[in-house]
Length: 207
Image (cartoon, rainbow, N blue to C red; front, side, top):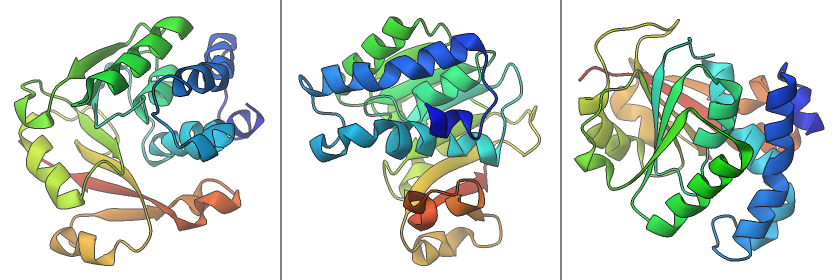
């Protein structure tokens, strides 16, 4: 919890919800593996705080609609939904047991601003202000599946589009979008060593 409170001002309700995540993920992960078993002790730093890097790129305006593509066990969607209770989040994954874990955890902490979709993004029809994703697929593939779902009406400080979290050398992946894309190293936002090799990518998109 402390590494979350270090970077974000939280209400009592948000503190309560964030404080429940580690125990819930540890319990569910023993039944359905959504986080590497070696990594479960680091869930707050490596998964929750990492997800919240999206909020450092863009604090979403109230009323924004966001879809999390390939959410897995609920990252980055669940931490972002806690942080932005006045936004609407759709968490999508093609693997049913992962959606089950994410929905059970959201229910346990009392999240009201999320819905869950067990499907492929290609089949999603809704319109959203932003798509977010955490290492779910290549940037080219993300753009291909979500461009149709990005609303033309902007309500945030950045034009609508895609924000994704990725690690390692991004140069080749960014090449097709180099005139549009913005790359952030997460050490701009967080001081922990873990984030030195982690990036956030923002790409404006239009349906």
